[in-house]
Amino acid sequence: MANGTLKAADTENTLAVLIDADNANPYTVDGLLSEVAKLGVASVKRIYGDWTTPNLNGWKSALLEHSIQPIQQFRYTTGKNATDSAMIIDAMDLLYTGPCKGFCIVSSDSDFTRLASRLREAGKVVYGFGEMKTPKPFVAACDRFIYTEVFTPQQRSSGSDDDVAPTEAALSKQSSKELRGNTKLLLMIRTGIDAASDDNGWAHLGPVGNYIAKASPDFDPRNYGYKKLSELIDAIGLFDIQWDGKVVLVRDARKNAAR
Image (cartoon, rainbow, N blue to C red):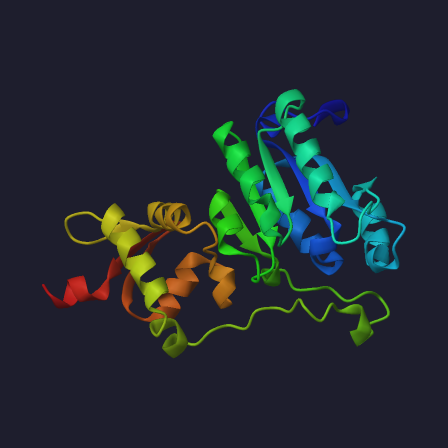
């Protein structure tokens, strides 16, 4: 990039990252922002909370390291979440005045369900980030929802176990037996293959993954401990897989048995 300016292609997918500090974990921010970088360019990075309270102290080093702008929001009334309101107002301001093509909403709070729906109605892409406890309506309101448990928390230089957030942990890799027992997962993969397959039952992995993502916004191979969809499908052991360079073809093994 010449003179520090973004190329035209880089600005085509600019994103606004809005973080609810009360419902997000600072120990996942490295992995979270790396994931955002795969989706586009984070032209706006803001985090909302009452920074006068000690419970947000864990965010301070992350804000400096990643140049995230803290937005102060005092708690005017006990039991009322003014942070959510501030995030929603800023999101709507950015919708009408900003150049952002999409939004990343980082929270496990269902209060952002209507916001996600409204942004999508305006033609914006919405990526949600939250813990697996996130209510399903918020998950379904996003184009894609990524559970923050897939981001392995990184310990600080002290190496103390106390530096690792207890609510976040790397997801363990599920065995073939466990995967085969997940009827919802098998149905999603088989339906995706059927939708993209040729007359012989073979389907390119890319369209299969796209179909599954549209049908289930929170689907991610990492939820099951696998980095790629091809690795997950191979581990299940109920599908035929062919590799031709970078091209991956998959087929329900039952199709081959029926021939």
